[in-house]
Amino acid sequence: MTTPHQHQPQRPDIAQTLIQHAKAASENRRAARSTAAAQQGPAGADAALLTDQANTQVLARIVAAHGWPGRSLVGEEAARAALTLALHADHDLRDQNGFLRAVHEAAQQREASAGQWARLYDRCLARDGKLQVYGTQHRRRPDGELELYPVQDHDQLDVRRAQVGLLPHAEQFRLLRERLAGGSGSLPVPVTDHDEDLALAGSNP
Image (cartoon, rainbow, N blue to C red):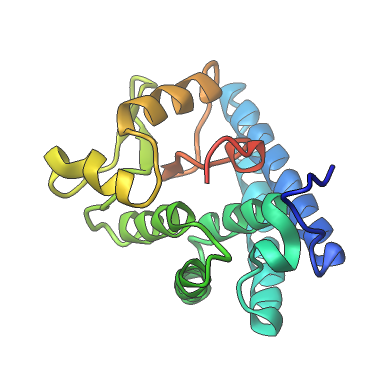
């Protein structure tokens, strides 16, 4: 429902497409974790990857035609959905790097949040084996616990997070653990603090 402080998106059709694709991808990832937990083989993970590949193509076409699908074009919920698709484009470095540039430009125009850019920036750094900056990427240890991907200058982490509108890491980490509690199967690597259901929950920028 639109509030007096919100505007109808310019392209509700694109908004619906993004939301539908993000929700379907989230369902596939949950199914993949359930499959892994039941030791039923890699079929679920393969299906999730195929979904991510298809979603990357969808998002790439939208970005090529319209630029980053930001708040004005598709609204807040669909803009978060677009970020979810970009975060799971790790299989395609060219497109994911292009999404990062597009989100950065959109953030400068206030069509995306600095926090959205920071999450995708960290994702690309972790993907390349580099130290992340904002501490948004996590992974599952062999014992099943989540841990932070390596981060530069950890003592100043929350200062940097505040600069882009992110919660202190300890608070965000607690929320992430609560949201992912009970999942004993494999998780996407890396896991973003804006990942999966968080992407459509609207709890943070």
